[in-house]
Image 1 (cartoon, rainbow over the protein chains, first blue to last red):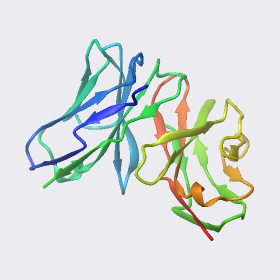
Image 2: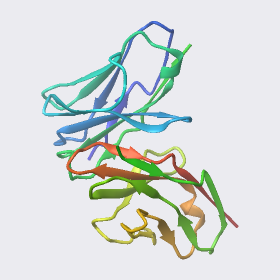
Image 3: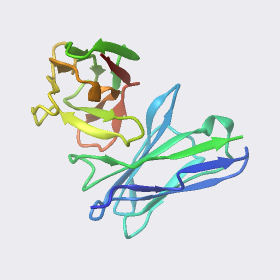
Image 4: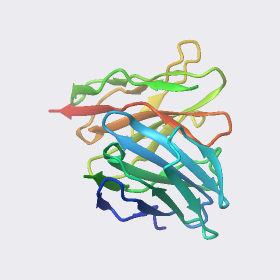
Length: 113
Length: 109
């Protein structure tokens, strides 16, 4: 079966712009989580969506937001980009999220210049 | 709040030598612990979880609640084990995973 797909794979944006990243989960998975990975902070949880509702949220500013559609695909948006937002953004999907294995996508590499 | 600590950024061992990747955690409740692995140019994938108590690719990990540790062990390292290893914790029924900073395992001949 197809794995978790993230698009685009690479993005270059300018400070102040906004960006939208997309994640298509494994078919049948209803939970989608987002993580930010940086060399300094490692992997940090952004938020989780389940059945179109945000179920958990990490400690990120309000510039980071997301949503989930009825087909479980998810998008995350970052507004007013800062240099520090440069990172690899990973999406993970699972059947229900709370006690099932999470499968990760390849990630979207965002560079803010 | 929960925290996961992996004290070693890099662990270099010879092929055939034993491997132990250290992981310590802090959490007041009963956590679920995982080891994830990322091979070169591949996505992050689950290696093992403590509740399954199984051995994957020769790796095992035992949850020691007294020492709040979940070290990953393998008796004989193979070249193909070279990768980045992350220890992660899930608290309660929440889906959020808290990751350690990772340890790069380098197996040399």
